[in-house]
Structure formats: C-alpha cells, structure tokens
Image 1 (cartoon, rainbow, N blue to C red):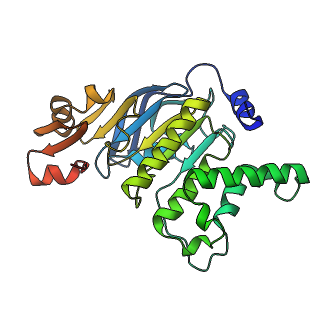
Image 2 (spheres, rainbow, N blue to C red; image 1 turned 135 degrees about the vertical axis):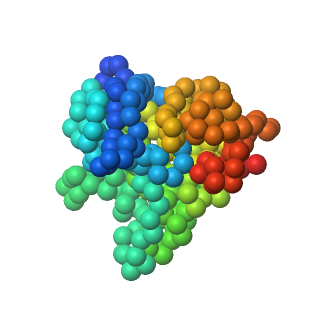
Image 3 (tube, helix red, strand yellow; image 1 turned 120 degrees about the horizontal axis):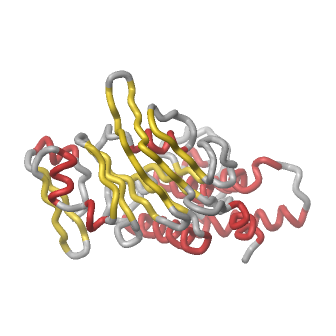
Length: 281
C-alpha cells in the first residue's frame, strides 16, 4: 500500500461515511425534498437522479457544509458537515469554462490538490513524489498531452477531466460528483467512470454521483437516490428505476424500459418526458 493509500485508510471512520436522518430542505415556501433517510457505506457507489430543479446539486451543497438542512440530521465521517478535513472529501463541480487568459496549467491544479496546503515547503524527495503522483493522475484521466497547456485554452471536456484528477489527488474517503460526465464523449465517459470505480474499490472511497444519465454508470451503481416532484426513493437500480416507482414519484404515468442492458425512461406526455432525464438509447 502506498503512503497516500495508508494515510487515506487511517482517515476512515468506523461505520457509515454518510448518514441522513429525516433530512429536509426548503427555500421559503418551496420544499425541495423532505424526509430523506440515507446511509452510505465506505466503498458504495450512490447515483443521485432526478429532473432539473429537484435539488440534486443542493444535496451536494448540504453534504459539503455549504447549505444547512431545514430539518433532520446529517453526519459525514462521524461528524457534522464542514468539519471533515479537505483531504477526506473530494468534490467534482459542474463544468464551468475558465477564462482563456488564466495561466494555471492542469498539472498546477492537480498538484494543489495534493499538497496545496504546504506549497513551496516540501523537500526535494517529496517534490519528486508529488511530480510522479501528478503525472499518474493526469495520465489516468487522459490529460497528459495537455498537462502544460494553460487550462483556459482547453475544451470543457478537457477541463472536466483535470477537475476529476484534482478531486482524486488525496484519496478521499467520500467523492462528491456533480454531473462529472458533462461534455465528455462516450470513450472519455467510460474512462472517467472506470477511474472513479477503481479508486472506490481499491481505497474504499464512497461515491455520491449526481447525473442525468444513469446508463454510463449503471454497471457500477450499488444504489440510487431518485428525487422527483412527488417525493423520493432509495434502493437498487432494479427497485427504483421501474415504471411503478417512477409513476409514483412523478405523479403521472412513466414507463421504464430495459433495452440491451440500458434503461430508457419515457413519460406519458411531452411535458413529463422533458423533465425526466433523457437516457441514451
């Protein structure tokens, strides 16, 4: 086991890494979601699904300690949100383009993810280890060829791969991903998901993966949290992604079809179909 893996293992707590008990969130008179009971274990892959505006990103903000629950309780790594070390939680935000004049390179961002808290203080030996680790992470997400290009000159998909490498740099106990596959083609989607899956298996990292499309991650998902206008459901993909469950969650007829190991979800009206995630056929 590498030193990084040993340090990560030492940071793990016994029991669940994440617990929500009767969790609810409201903005004014609008209830985003309520009554969520959820326990996530080390090494578990949880996909968070639902239409736009259902509160998926808000849930990640709660887990990061940036938004307080209106009701209920949250525990991360045995403590309240926000108390966990930056080295125990990795976060991949939604894609956002960087100003083209930004001089920071991908390798700079990844290095800051590894030792940004001690920038400039490491000895020669440690700097060599860090450079090797940066190269390893960039290679793992397919970013080696543009590692020294200013990040503002990269495409959206290239920038997103760099963010994923940065989030994985400290072997986090919990990895929170907010639509990490946006702007990636199918090949790079598979590469990124394979990387995240390998890390969670080898290091026991729990993954909370917000996505509109379940099919790219379906082979890896242990459970699904589906948030929708009429409520939420937690369970295995086979239990949640069914016509009966989705019809209940949307309050209107919904068909969930299995087609060659893929799931296609179709609503009973054009309006409903628009608000349900559009899964690849």
